[in-house]
Image 1 (cartoon, rainbow, N blue to C red):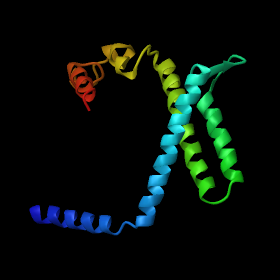
Image 2: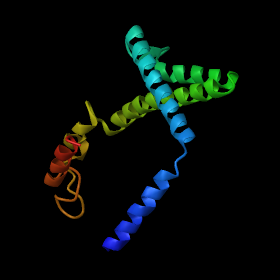
Image 3: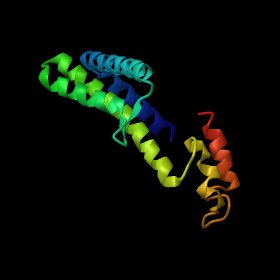
Image 4: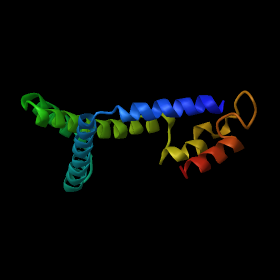
Length: 151
């Protein structure tokens, strides 16, 4: 078994050695675009008083609108700046999607608060088929949730 693990480590080392520096540079630029987008979204949210605004009774994610604007701009700009705008658009869209779907799931599960409160809401009485240690809300679930908080 040790020889096979050594072989896997050797293959992993070879594959890392084959990474092109141009790809690493491009990934670094993409990360910079994502970080700048995050900073812009944080500034925008602070300036307008939150990232979710209610317009005509519909909650609209401001960063979702920002994502659409960046995506439209990326289609107009050619070359590397256009690609970076596209990455920034995807980052902003991801930010909006996380909040939108988190709100959707909270309403669907009837959860008030964070997802860590899920164990104390609707699912807390369910013991599962195999007894209290394998279902939602059992003692094992409480220990798993407590351990996950430290990850």
